[in-house]
Image (cartoon, rainbow, N blue to C red):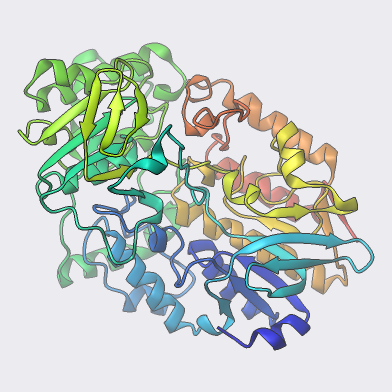
Length: 539
């Protein structure tokens, strides 16, 4: 880490919070403008989510050909992806390569957590304080914490009494956890829980999976790449680069264009079978748009996936517990799986339905449900995150006139396009609520777009001898109204999930991510820029 004493005294142009996908690219981009920039990250290394989430089985479910940076042709040529869906180790190696390739570490303070950021009306600058005693004075603050950076660690009654090992997947020890021949319990069956369960089942003595909500999932096909594969993928990079900006969710695969019910039933089935067999998220993100809007279409696709789940599980009673019935396919996060459902055919795996037998407490020996105590050596919490808002609420942001972001968001979570917040001048946000990145966009695609918009905005201010930018209350309200109008037409906005904040007690029920599609979002952002940041106060 750079000399803290000198950093404390030198004013900066920008402080970036987070050294993951957005943070590293934002640092590179602002450096290109010749600005003095400092990145601050609580981790000991780069990678963001791919530093913290080192639990067994962690991997992307976006293909590597779109899960990467596009700002450097040399990087695209140099980096060799090993598989379609990189695991955590490969993703972390990629970020370390990027940090070294572009000499980014010299401007990053690791093991440093931002505690507060306070706007000074008199100087029109931010003061950023950290847990290490480092205080930074800066013109701009840019958040790059990621939408899933605040783990939800529930406090079960008696949790502190457990004599074994208890660990959350998002804070998995870097040295690992010995699970061999252990009795392990996993609480949670979302995307992370699915990856953990299917990975550790063969090595543990006994695995007990505690499920509150059954989840749809699509089988992953994850081929390894050789040089010929990589050459073929690279040959398509110009085409891929263009495609990711024009598809609904920022992938390089177009969606179905024919209306769902205009297709004969037998042909619809053939299409669904082909989408299912693709080994990607195509069934969800590039299938039929009606899945998100039309209850009848959603029901048919949901029944198709339910049938596939039942085919994979031998015990009909277990299959019924694993089959979602309280929500339709695609209205909650759809993960990829690699043998998850078949894991429950193993003799050393049990499934506990928490709807039928809820957890009463954690004991010294394990977990007690209403059906009795289950003795365990290790408890793994795959309980998710305070999505979208948690990373922001962990920091005491104070804007104009000392207004607290925490207090404001208790009333209502508000942003302008997920890029700025009224009342917080020169605070730029990535992965914030009401942008697609919070749920409905391939993260690298949307993050790179947001970073580019922020960089161009800062460049605009400097070229026009301006110092401060802030969205108006009216512009913010217009964006929220637009967001709600689109969201409320969907089945997603009516479904309880972390998408709508229902996994957090007391959190307002509202779709947190813009679901109008990436092209519409880019168009809205471009219009603001082309009209000299209309709807923003610039001074």
